[in-house]
Length: 61
Image 1 (cartoon, rainbow, N blue to C red):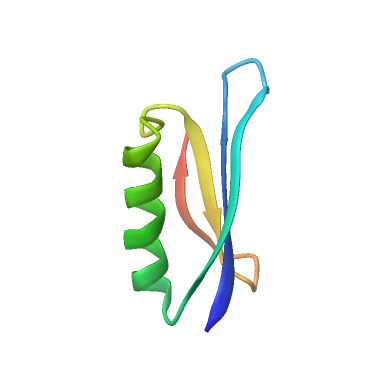
Image 2 (image 1 turned 180 degrees about the vertical axis):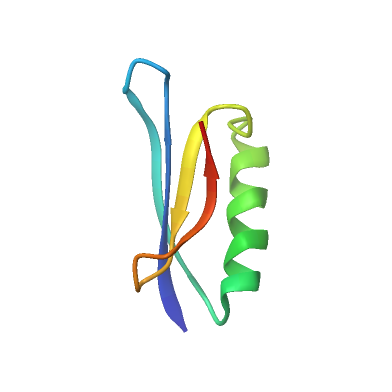
């Protein structure tokens, strides 16, 4: 398992959420990231999901 980091921000830069979670693959991490964003109703906010290697898997401005 690898550790991924999801962050979401307001347009003014205020941090709304910062979550870390484990996933076996990047695809699994994307699914988990989308589910967390949906659960917290943050899908339309600026957000990013980064892999342990620093690769952006999800990004929205």
